[in-house]
Length: 84
Image (cartoon, rainbow, N blue to C red; front, side, top):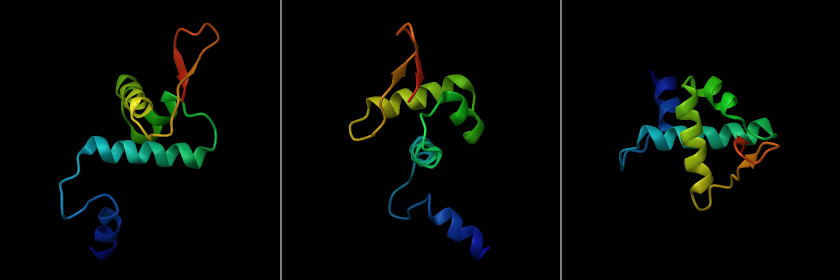
């Protein structure tokens, strides 16, 4: 029980409720730093076990946030974002 509390305390703060989306965004940023290469939606899908649309939506949200540190990379035609 103690080990589980220690692990979960990393994601939960007792002073204010934490939304699932903010935890997922923090985990995506952590994943981006550990991969040390451009982050693809498929990487987020596999890591968080979510569907493709949710991964793209979260990556788009992180790219538009100020101070997120992520910027989109488009494909060769410039039509679709393929990496972050």
